[in-house]
Image: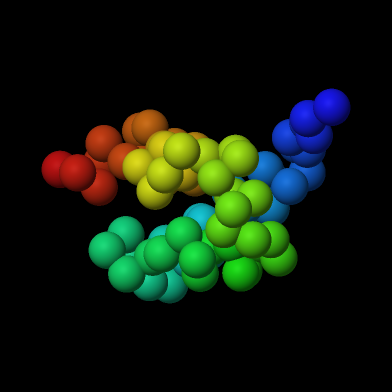
Length: 70
């Protein structure tokens, strides 16, 4: 039986991504740093997000991302 993703773990990952993005910026933020900050493994992070772009989309609200892109 496969393990089901836990919403609390997903929230920790998103919070860690926000903190990492705020301190390091998009280019310097790595999934390994986000996983470490969230207290999980990079393999577990990939159970929740396919990659950095998907994690960024979850961590940064769309309106904020559009404003930053301008």
